[in-house]
Length: 176
Image (cartoon, rainbow, N blue to C red; front, side, top):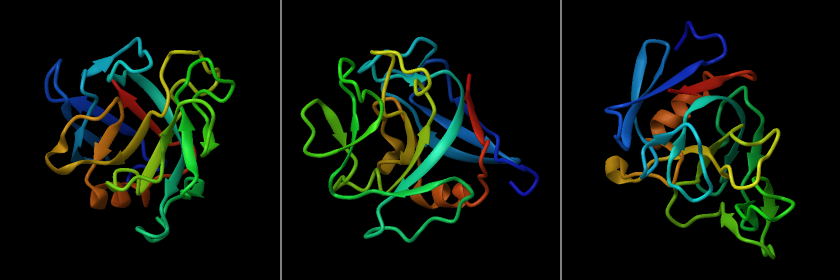
């Protein structure tokens, strides 16, 4: 990772239909979980697929009650008990952070299972936002056994924190 000036990341699935893969950066490989439907070039809301493409890593959210402030060059934001992420395609705040209680469907960022203790926001369907093309595409903490995600990329907590320390503004992730 020391030779990666901005932390350019590559995710490769173990096979074309696999829900597991590896994230490569600077000559290192980290095991990861992918979406329950594998990878798709044409992402749709709720399809359970990890989107294929190249995405900028926008920012990092973290829970200060569960995780020390991560070391990273990316912008940091705190997850609060009211933090949410709108996943309702018809809502004006679709694929944006919101505060709970929220009148439309919105994911809870303050989760009891620890998956969102550290979250990296990918710029998938962010600018421009297209209704129904996917929301809340993150890199976050993996479940034990790397069980599939709902479309995100999930890493061991220690690996995610180690990776964050090498990321700077302009870092990108490629998912072929």
